[in-house]
Image (cartoon, rainbow over all chains, first blue to last red; front, side, top):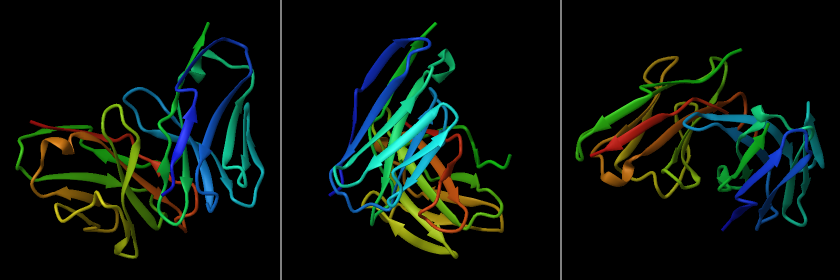
Length: 110
Length: 114
């Protein structure tokens, strides 16, 4: 059974820092991995989707990498801003539908 | 930019009552989904829907749950007899052509069962 883990559970950094969020999964037989952002009491915003055949995807200040064989993905946020404060979720698409991590709650201090 | 919408944003109901949660997926999308997130817990998949039938469903999606696309735009989730443990945020999502593409989520319906 696929398990998705995100470390750390929470992270607080000063504005301007580059940071890395981690996602690991137990079953490497995946179709894709998606990173989402969730603001308090709000919906889920898709940030990046990496297909299983890809190694990374970039969107603006965000870069996501995928190492399927080791069951890991990272989300790199460059030059963090207070507006980046949110919970970041990764979700893995395998034979079953999206299996989700518990998220990393990110706080960017001005 | 097209978006998924959901109504109502909040719903309070008594245990044992039926509730219907409504979603309008993005208009040219073919796959539709329901997920739920119990407060403080992970997001959980409930069901996917394609070509007017259920494509996949999880163990959570038992006989108390049903989905329907009553017309060309709405996608509904019905809970026949709500239980306290059904209290959660329910998210609808859609994807364009396949279920391996980016899924776009609505803002959610917060359901509270008393």
